Image (tube, rainbow, N blue to C red; front, side):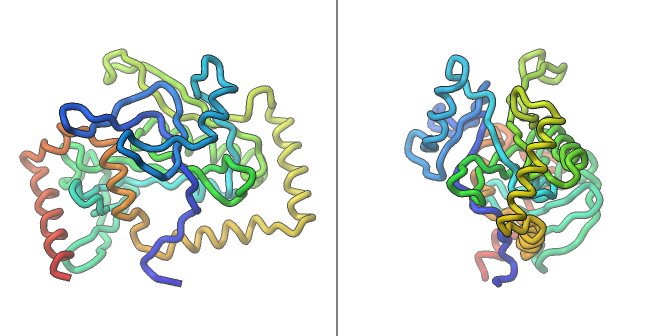
Length: 294
């Protein structure tokens, strides 16, 4: 297997709660109050919607897609939700530094180095919004491709914190049968002082409507027994997935980073490199120059 290349779950499409629009000749992110399911193909008008988007929208009240039935691919919560602090090069989309609040891996002119990660609030390179939490949730929507996933990307603390809690709780409550539970993504909103009382939308993960925890556990146990009888090895699948994520020292790739720049970083933030944040900008320039020399 190629070293340095993370083997991540196959992605069939994307789930988002916003979109990128063009204003005054610039592409800027725009918030939304519903989910959108897209393919991986982009046109001049934006991402092309996946057929599942219209299919699920027809079943939703007022065709507002705020609930999506999903299934987890893995039993291990950390394989379904990947999250860490990430500093991207704003021009190339290349991840420069990835950390967990204790330690980080950082691209330098000498290669990937290990450093202490004090979290974005106390890191010199993270000033002026340079570094954000970056989460990727992999879920299955298409029963025709049971190992294919749709990815939900977010830089929001609310979504990452809520999804991490739900996954760990359901994992524990089900006795390591997370992949067998009937689940759904829900779009929720709340207002805070920081949002100036305007709604902030985030993603939650719950049992499907009308299903109690007791019923869900019974469904999970039956599904697990049927899978084992058919010869399916969930434990082996989790092991291989964990191994695939570990092939690369830094998981995110530049192509993915460019999508993140487009969706989550406002244009005005891209231009606010002042004061101590210049250190991050200088590091980005040095890395860009060294990669061009190679």
